[in-house]
Amino acid sequence: MAFRLKREGSMPKQLRRIVHSELRSAPEALDGGAPDDTGIYEARKSVKKTRAILRLLRKPLDADFSDENARLRIVARALASLRDADATLDTLRQLHGRYPLAVSPRVVRAVTRGLCVRKRRAEAKVKPIVRRAKDALLVSCRSLPEHIERTGHFRATRAGAVAGYREARTACRGLALDGESAAFHEWRKRIKDHWYHVRLFHQLPQGPQSRTDTLRRLEQWLGKDHDLATLRSIVLDGDDRYGDARTRTLLLGSIMRHQASLRRRAMALGARVFAASPKEFKASVTDWWRQR
Image 1 (cartoon, one colour):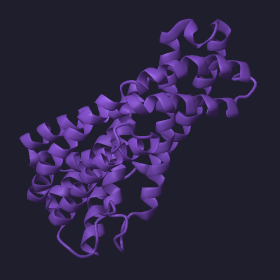
Image 2: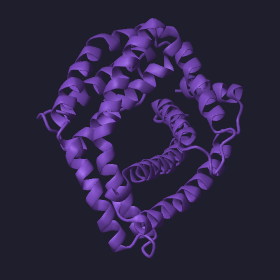
Image 3: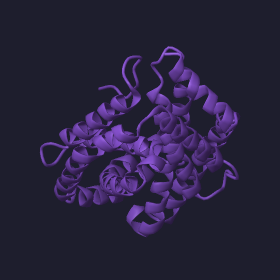
């Protein structure tokens, strides 16, 4: 089932069906014991969507939120560890395309050697990670949809969407181009939740079509910033495993340059996206649902 609310049907039942569908899709994407990159990517997407709905209903779920979110958080982190190995290689290639003089073929070859060793180590852990993830997802599939239907009424859902908007709006305040990567990553997580919340209403007649697209672009910029920060951390911690001092200096300088560009655009767009007050956003959510 698509990740969206439809014109027909109650909100609690629709949210239940969406969560149930995502929790069934995730283990299926991991079938085979050692899934490929696409399978891991699809499973991670389903977990993120499910956790976004969990956060949407955090207050009415109460203790059930803590239990279910803790289980899915462990799954998300485990699958992320498998994804990072490929993301860093992709990020290195993108840097080469953007700054070919600094991130030259020689730099790419030296850093790739270290990243490939790291990837092989991650691949050795795939099977046990996938097995534990599937077991946890099946447990959630048996319990979580019922909790969602019990709590997912419009008022609670709207309140959760407004809370998510407020959190994303607050997280972008005080950010600076040279700020800590952790702060930008936290903003990205709140943007991602808000984006998923908005996507639920996307296909309704008065739904937020343009906002959905804008949030997607903002999330992608912040995702690239996170991948750059991950690569930077790996190279800094790895010393000569990722080339000599000159190689690392050229790479780290290019990472900082690209991060500054991404952050500048993200902060400017974020200021526009979150210009409305939470009260104004609440009115928008009401219109999306009531005018279906």
